[in-house]
Length: 292
Image (cartoon, rainbow, N blue to C red):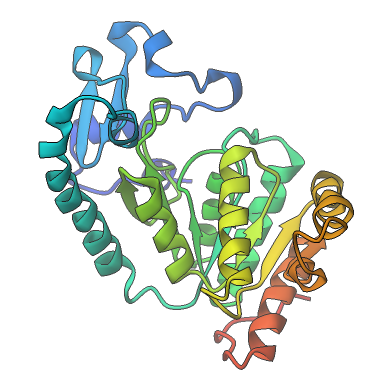
């Protein structure tokens, strides 16, 4: 594999960006807030900007927005935040408008490269690309990186929608088209608008947020014809049982709400379900191969 593929860099790349891209992506316990990192080792991306050492701000744009209650001076700055938020939507819509059929793939940033779930995510990315879909992830390490890798190596379109966080340094090297967002709500809009469905691997709070965002929009009919696959029965069965035994039993959801979820351990079955559901809903399948 060439250095260009490993780093995702081409000719004429800025040396600072090259150094950042080649740096190992932190996973698991190594993904720590910048506040606990020695000053000389701090590195952060803020939108298009690269910051190092003393220039690294230990807060995020979302944090400054949501934690700003109290001082009246903030009232005069919030209108300017609206302009920045608008710019994020404009940039996202402009970059993804011609993407074509796409599926969102979600999972933990903490999934290690040698974990079976990493291999599953990579296989999902490969099969989706071969079926004719672009693959959209959060652009981070772990399962997201694996899905991007599978899609890119299969010749598909590999998309990463990154987010400004205290412990993230940028998009993974397998993202071919990437956008960095400051605000979660703008980023989540892009996931739902430009994906025709979600495949969700085991993950933590962020993965659950994306899963239930989709389920809420489907239940309230804000989006329709949107298949959602949970990959990993041992991981997800307990959640489905809780939804059935507690939420459904207490009358908080309908039986049909559970029908929106398809549970499997097989990446090929996950992709087949997405294709079959979209076709059943009258959406033409992409001109790719059907997984065996």
